[in-house]
Length: 303
Image 1 (cartoon, rainbow, N blue to C red):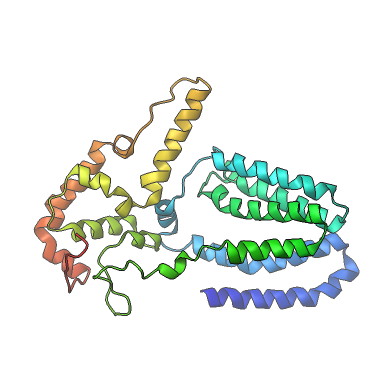
Image 2: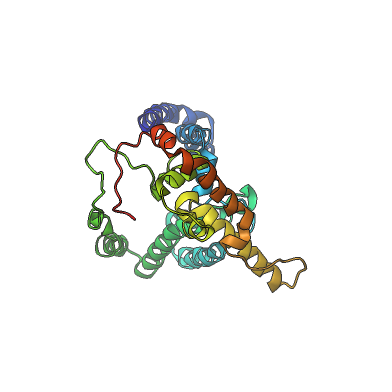
């Protein structure tokens, strides 16, 4: 799929290049650039459409952390402050191209930071955009003070070389004895499996089969909730509810509700149904489920 995306990108890139001299004759400069932007965006929009229409896409995104809310997050206001703060040095510089560029960038950041107000979908957008806000703000301040590109280059070198997080290289440092790296085997269940496109019910079922022959309790299901439901249901949805309750109480409104944890948010019956499923379906028919998921090897290293 990625190869298809880049193929389309190259095609439209060349198409835009061929249209550039033609558009130069018939439309104004701003309209020409806007046309080129639209043409270059077509493959990205096409690829985006393929993604969101993939099986179990929205189900997977909710496991990862998607929350449906129009309420701006605290992080949105925090990074919006820094985005506006970055505008100050950008405005005072004499370089018009630099000033225009950072004004557009800052406005774009603000739109992204509060995009869930319009779309109604929040996926830690501000936390991700905030990394670029701080970087752009740093570049704007350094450039405004020094008025030279050399200082910006030194800043980028410092950020990407001396301040980089190299923890990625320790990926195999704590591997467990049951590691299946460099083999043709697969694990029956792993919490990271929820990051891939799959139905949430299958992830839960794999968890219950993986737990055999343990004696599960509601307390166990609550403690492991994030591993088989994902970060979204276990953290973000509960946190979003509590966030709304706190704001409601801050403005002394009625019907605010109370702060809840996982158990009180989903209710005792929710986890009881999972427990009943384990005891009535999974436990007495474990052989059938082992065959369903092609389980050929069982170890107990992770228990």
